[in-house]
Image 1: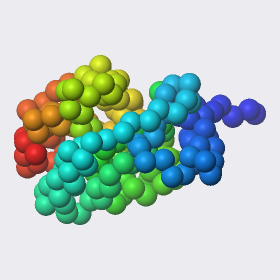
Image 2: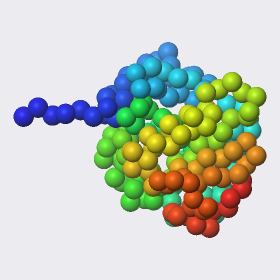
Image 3: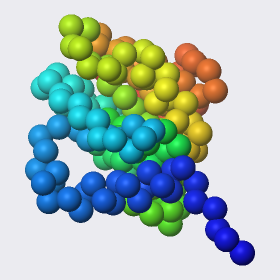
Length: 173
């Protein structure tokens, strides 16, 4: 009986080709792929990195039992997306590892930091909506978007006032 390869698994395989390519291993930018498996580079400003570190610290404070790495790759139906910060429970991490690298199962929480408004990067609200949809389809319980002003917007099936997973997490970073 033939096996069916999902789109996320195809993107997972393409990602393995990319990370094995010696010419791409030292890129100074965040690397993702689009739905066609093409490489998309996203250079960051320092404000972005500082916001990631602040989010990571708040996650450690409000959910110390979980893991909160930055720049975490997730194979989705629309390409490999790299969440700026994630939060996952140890049990979820075990399940994610079973799906391969990058995981085709998203962590409980994926966080994206919006770029500065004068940037011409494509991470605007349309892209955030697309990423949000892909992360939720891959099994994320919530997607948080941190605005340029530091406000945290929480999304599950729709936008919520606070996180359902980590209700004590502040609304501002």
